[in-house]
Image (cartoon, rainbow, N blue to C red; front, top):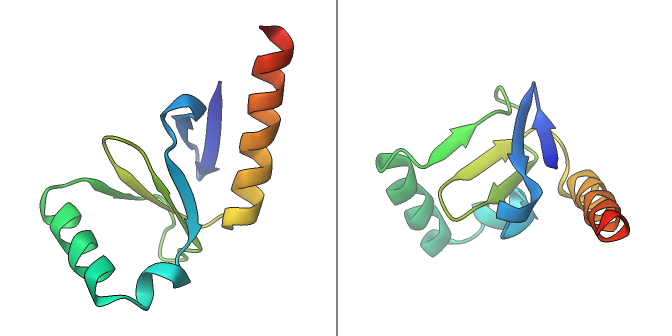
Length: 87
């Protein structure tokens, strides 16, 4: 099962390590340095079309989404519940 991140982009729910609001990243110099490094390495995928509200961390990439972290977390919980119910 996949979590829809917006504008047709999806990621497997099993790969998601963390979902957070973008404002959390903007207040820390250490975090900004981390993101700059990941961007240089090509590991940031922006699917927000300039309207970033949240970020999703997977082992391979960091996704920037236009969907709020709260909405993504609700969707993720539904996927997890469905997987447990099927399993």
